[in-house]
Image (tube, rainbow over all chains, first blue to last red; front, side, top):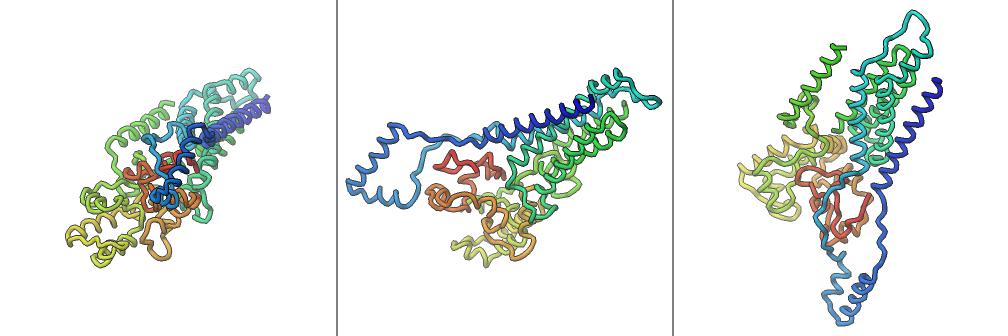
Amino acid sequence: MKCNARLKNIAASACLAAISGMVYADDTVQDIVIPSMASTYTGGSRSYMLALNDTGAVKEQAGATPAMQTAEFEPPMFSGSNAHKYLGLGTLALVVATAIAPKPAEIEDRAPTQAELDAQKSSTHAKLGRAAAALAAATVTTGLLAHWDDFHLEDGWTDPDNLHALLGTAGALAMLAAVSQAPEGGHAGTGMAGGIAMGIAIKLTW
Amino acid sequence: MSKKLKVVALLAGVLLTNGTYAQAEENFGKWLINFQRTKEVKPVTDKQYLKECGDCHFAYQPGLLPARSWEKLLTADALKNHFGDNAELDRDTLQAIHDYAVENAADKSFYKRSRKIALATAEGEAPLRIIEVRYIKRKHQDIPEKMVKGNQDVKSLSHCNKCHTQADKGVFDEDTVSIPNYPDWDD
């Protein structure tokens, strides 16, 4: 049963990571420009201009890219970078929610029954903890995909992006470890350490 | 349980009240408890700097170069030949602009991109051009030349605001980049 729950956690994290990958793929999708009849016509018109010995047109061709009228630029509402940001903030919110959610009573003087173990695993605290760990894994995945070029070892660990990546990954791993340890004692400390590491990571690049 | 709730409520309170009046003061303590975004470069707030520099070119944020660079750039002699142009200023104006640039330089800023620039320029000669900063160079190395030098609406990497649509606000992230004549370009 415990193995089953762990498998579920891993599967949930993998699914979120896969979704994160899709977000990135959508963000970097190539816009294929298919030539239309209109573009063939306008392309052809240029040869007529050259035939007219329009030296101005020739200079423009050789010098630079023709200016295009573009609509006012609007930054994308949804991008890999934004997905990473919202997942990170969501993780922090879930860490706080996990910490304050009511926990099932601890049983110290005897071995818990199966019903008590099931109750612990299905408690709000446990569900929030698992969700936080899964979101943390997705945050790290989107971070690696969307910001891979902001991370350079030669800049050293004082570089804010390097430190952000290090602390964020360590925080996510600590949260996964806490979920894996639960409901045994000591998992709360690991989970909180993970949450704090992630909080500092966010602050460094906020 | 109630103790934890109190701590969380206190933290939430600090977070909410701080955000309303926090200013990006260049002080570590204030930065730590400041929840305003400092991910980019501190925007120019000085009207004189904006006017004097912005009359001829994009008013580059002081956080784009270290103080050593501004010290070299903003002297009466240096401004006589400011990248090929005479940009002389009267003594008081020059002093005010110099002081503003040096006080808000990359190595004195807690804004993330400025900190990265400060790290990249910590050693060696102080760069005089922003595009000479290792970090800035690296960020632009994948952009084909035809999109910059060969692009009549850009011409040079020094024209930051041609592609960085929110450069005047100090925002240089990829989501706000739009290269003229290449609207579909994506890094």
